[in-house]
Amino acid sequence: MGESVNNVDVLLSRLTWPSVLVRERAAVALADLMSQEGIVCEQTQDAIMTWIGQQNLESAAILGIIAFCRLADHHRNKLPEPGIINRELRRPSLLSFELLRFLYGDHALKPDWTQCHSGEPTPNFEPPEFFEKFRNNFLPPIYSTWINEVQDRTLLPMFRQWAFEWTQLVSSLGCKPSAQVLDFGGRSPGLRMLVDFPLSEVYRSTYLRSLAWAVTKGRLPEDTAFYLAREACPIDLGLWRVQPGSKPPWWPSPMPSPGTIDTVPAQLSTTLSDLWDKKSEVFEENTLLAASGSVQCGANTYKLSIRAMFQAVTGPVAGDPAEIMKACDDVQGSYTSQDVYFAGVLNPIKPTEISLVSHDWSILPASVYVRPHFFPRWQYWRGYRGIQLPAPFLTSEKLSFRCEPDSIRIFEGTTQIGTWQDWTDGVTEEFVNDLPHPHGWALLVHSDLVDEFSRLSHSTFGWICEVKVFHREHEHEDFREFSTHQLYGTTNLILPS
Image 1 (cartoon, rainbow, N blue to C red):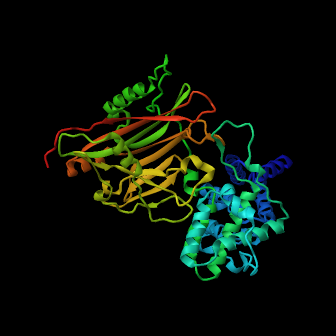
Image 2: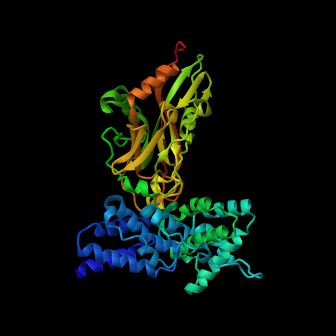
Image 3: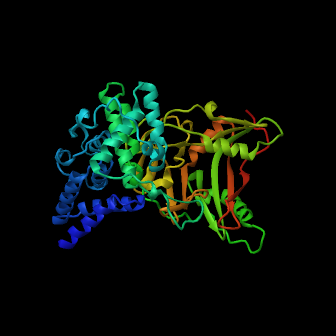
């Protein structure tokens, strides 16, 4: 029993560890302990409650609540009664209320927003130089972008309020701000780590306080404030549920080049050609709409991207592959849900809104990127581009999606018609800024949807594939990037209308 308590204390200390991956693992482990029967569950819950009550930072307190959110995903019956977390929470915020609404729905108690900020700055207050200089170092620039947007729309002095909240909190904590933690020694050029320092949490907490202040001024609607507060959430609760799987057997695994000439791109081209020819055997009743991932081979890193498209031909001049790839890779979709759980209904997109004319080819991308409503920094590799989902016009009914333990599942009405799955291959805290993350994903959809749309639109279904090569001779050099493109399934024949 004593060992269990010690383990919980260690895990709670890891919730505020600089490494975002350590934080995520600690939250998962705490939820696993709470899912057990008897005294272990009770002791863990009591320890987390006590820990939440000791936090002076809003963005730290929510980390304990997030452990309960993880528990709720599989064992909602083990949650404490509504109101217990509220009683322990010393620093409520817009974000903590969002998470409590996820846990308890209408039973969550809304805080008094006037108690969630520090009031008005004194007339002679001047923002500290340190705050201005380092706010985009300790936090991603998106926080400043949102504050600037609120300031423009409400005409409230949001940056001044943020600086005032920051000054008040630094003073009450008795800390001395220092930028020395940003200087890591002994790292190769371009090597980065995604970390959260104690001062990052000060900036993040005072961001939340500034939003609460704008709400109490009557200039910022609550719903908008909730949307902006989600930026401080470290994980999308839906994507957190989806466990990265194993690299699929069809994903290319080229052999290192035997000599000085790089043969890997040619090997990838051959593998992809074979995959296209045998796709009905490999994917059975499904069709690959999109995939992307890194391929490590020897000293070089390669990023392979596959995008599906529908092609119509009006003349003899073929489309430009690089232009087609960019068009397919840039298409953005949107969805209706706006909470901390990645799920919802895709908003309609007309084919004419995203189609491309490249020389004598008309191209229609078959999938779109959909972004979570905030950057899930505990799973940073999933957050940079978003998630690929089928283009909404592939079905006659609305497309919806939800997260399950094995995949993101896509539905037409109540019928599942596709899946998005991903895998990791050596993801760590450190990554090279110019290289793709060791991560991959694939989007599959029922083949009959693709066949029917091709028939109705008098188009040809095909793939555009891109291989990016990242190479450097020495560690002190920047990576050089080369790209090759290949088309599969396209035709130069004009199809009858």
